[in-house]
Image (tube, rainbow, N blue to C red; front, side, top):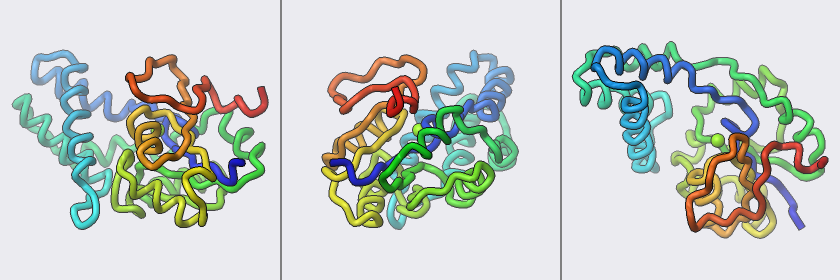
Length: 216
Ligand SMILES: [Mg+2]
């Protein structure tokens, strides 16, 4: 029996169109004379690599990682930018909820713990703005580690007082959510809103195209 739900936020509950980052990447690309996708790929790879090593005593906030990885990417393409200021200005303080998010949360009869790679203040403001109230929230800043590392999932289980087999994790990222949960034996549901293929080896309990699956 599922006694609680662990739930990702960005791309799962909250729409994350990445428009701010895309605009920065487009600007760097134009100045470097390359296509924006090349800059995006480089920036993302550096960000993921940095997030992977930013844990425990080496933890860094997402705002810090975004700016540091952008600075490296801009350097790589030979473009000068004020990475910190660009990233600060690009943060969307009020991204919208997906239309199915509030009905989904309202339909649940077990506790929910959000497990989100996010800076606590930023996430707190978004949840408050949308009136999202759940039993527990674990951010990467709380856990001092980013998914798919185990710390955020372990903190969520500890706060709920439950074991991996008691919960289901729901999220949109094959690596952060599915692989992260699987490593601890937590069953996961893949929210695949845009029809992406799953990398081989990942076997979610279920793949759904929206959060309306409980009522369908
Ligand atoms: Mg996500």
